[in-house]
Length: 96
Image 1 (cartoon, rainbow, N blue to C red):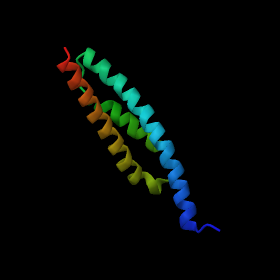
Image 2: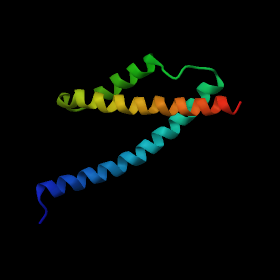
Image 3: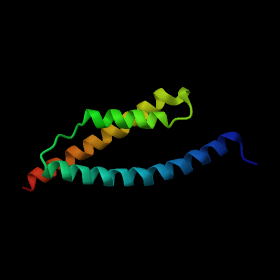
Image 4: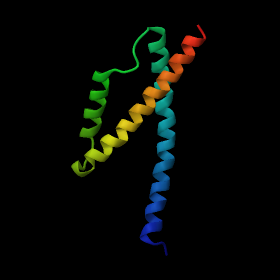
């Protein structure tokens, strides 16, 4: 019989696997955005878009107790996305 700890860790492992797949999918879209921005000489940071993402996604939370933790998580995702866009745009400029 599994302990509560073992059961919880199994759930976390399953969620982490799903998050990896979703992260890869998200970053593929980020790559497409970066290419568009590079081709159209657009800045990486779009404050309006980030605010929309934060607001819309926070509204989907069923638990207000998790709100600040989710915002921290989302800030990390957005930072990784901007960093990835920056790398792609820099490579684009080098190859021109």
